[in-house]
Image (cartoon, rainbow, N blue to C red):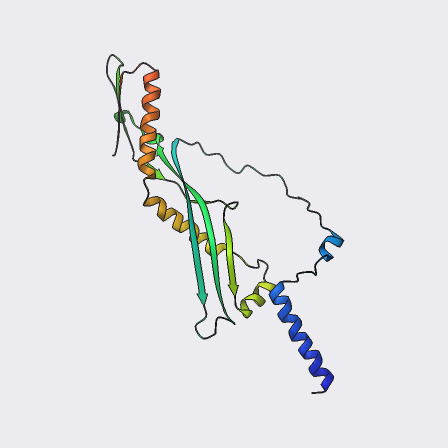
Length: 209
């Protein structure tokens, strides 16, 4: 191979490595020189469906989890193929009581309308919801091949895997918490206050089938 060809090949390799590592980052000052503007050209939001809600959201828990997700290739060193992401996920889980399942047999009122007994289903947990404003990646480590893949990908540095894992851990933490117990207590207080204001002297609320 001629000497000039070796030089061209070396320059090409260096350029590829630089692009993979910095993702076409411009030199300091160049970005400010040209300037950028953001235009929201989204179409109007369309209402697809309406669902009547019969549940009482009685409590909400705020959770935070640190996700440390590592993916290794079996036969390649981490410097070439492998990723490790440290991600802080913050989200909420609501606990609710479904009042729509109440039947006539679940509500008993005495003849004088001074005493009422209600039997409600146990509180349940809603789906964990990740808060994007309070969730962020602390660090990302990627092998050379992964960085090259990010360069040619439509969704570089995607965080879907760690986000799903964060939602899973938050949901599990909610199950181990006292969130449903708090929801039932708050629901009892709400119903007793409501019925007392309607003239009932004694209000009993129980939970279970």
